[in-house]
Amino acid sequence: MASETALEPARALSRRLHNTVLLKREDLQPVRSFKLRGAYNKMALLSADKLEKGVICASAGNHAQGVALSASRLGTRAVIVMPTTTPQVKVDAVRGLGGEVVLFGESYSDAHAHALTLEQQQGLTFVHPFDDPDVIAGQGTIAMEMLRQVQTLGADKAAKSGHKTRGLGATSLDAVFVAIGGGGLVSGVANYIKAVDPRIRVIGVQMNDSSAMIQSIAAQERITLPDVGLFADGTAVKQVGEETFRIASSGLVDAFITVDTDAVCAAIKDIFVDTRSIVEPSGAMAVAAVKQYVATHKTKGETYAAVLCGANMNFDRLRFVAERAEVGEEREALFAITMPEERGSFKRFCELIGQLPGPVRNVTEFNYRMSDANRAHVFVGLSTQSKGESVKIAAHFNKNGFEALDLTHDELAKTHVRHMVGGASSLALDERLLRFVFPERPGALMKFLSLMRPGWNISLFHYRNQGADYGRILVGLQVPAPDRLAFEGFLSTLGYPFVDETDNPAYRLFLRTP
Ligand SMILES: Cc1ncc(COP(=O)(O)O)c(C=O)c1O
Image (cartoon, rainbow, N blue to C red):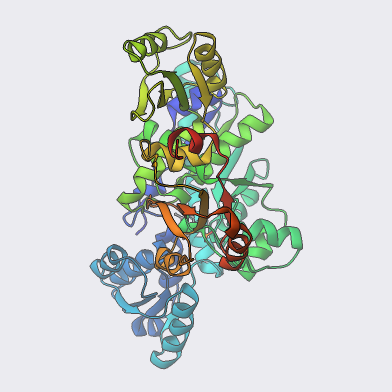
């Protein structure tokens, strides 16, 4: 039913990290994730009577597709309860696999509660996404395949090179990296690996804003997170399972690593470079963790396997991923350059870029608008190859007569100002500039707008949906000096976290009233 997916070397990444990184290609399963394994195993083990009545689950993601496909292969009914907010593309995918979609409630927990009601009413069997021994065992088949496959890979390599070493050409793994949501995957993999070869380290990986398993293990009890980051939606789980918590906290998982959004975006790019495939954020967490592990432990010559557990990503997220991958790796440096507003200035500056020490620089961005009779401010992006280069480049510009401000790590410059250059207004007197960040979800912007009705004139508003986990908004408000106290009061009642950017140098140079 589930395919035996390939375990293949990530050649470019392995070279860069001086360790062999093997990718377990679960992104190539028929439903583009490993979830099929657990769902099918659970359903194939049901009695003929139960199977005939059909199954039910609540899911808006990969589990839904795994259950629907398994049911169609086993010739039974699958009812999939999804929140009404589920994107149409996912509803269609499940229907396309033969699942009966029931749209109910606004959140996953509403859908889950409704699924339990239907289970009782219709005599269906509930298929849990992770907290079930049969589901866990199904996910564990990934480990069984990997241990067999690495032997074949190692034996081939050793035969070619004529000798046997650990690391390159090894016939075993040093560590396996696995993403954790509810914990079914890591429980299955760890159980199998520790039973067969306990020397292999099992490393569990979570997002830093969605780490229910790590926090539960630290607290020695299952905790419920009030909120989880939505970027890696496959692993965004508020509470892990009872059985998965028992297994993950029993010592079978050797270590846990958290990764952040930028690191995951950079890993999606690394995987693309080696495979020409795009995985979803949860599917890249293991690779992000391998990179972090190697940087922390300074290992060399070891062999790691990373499970690419899924590839169901909306296309419109790619823009955000591509932008952040560059930032995550520091492949782009941003500057505000001030130069005399006179003929030949641009030309001299471009020549200087060509003469910068180090590799050839691509200009990734160049924004300018005349706003001052004597001086021009230009927003410039340049490609870089390693961390810390922007500081050296800025020093070089300054030394050669071009005043340069390094904006590479300036969140305001990267998210908003680069798209707003030329926005200085001679009318926007007494302007206060505020930057808001809030979890992105349907209706969030409208809610923000409806609260944002103060007595002050809005002189600037910038929002761009980037398919990201957080919405980012920049607002300028005209607040005359006598109103300042009242304005602070308004901000504190608004209830949204914000950063006051009124003194930010990028704002002063590109947006503020001259
Ligand atoms: C792509 C992907 N990766 C990882 C996970 C996490 O699996 P588990 O909940 O078994 O920890 C999921 C869960 O749906 C997933 O879809």
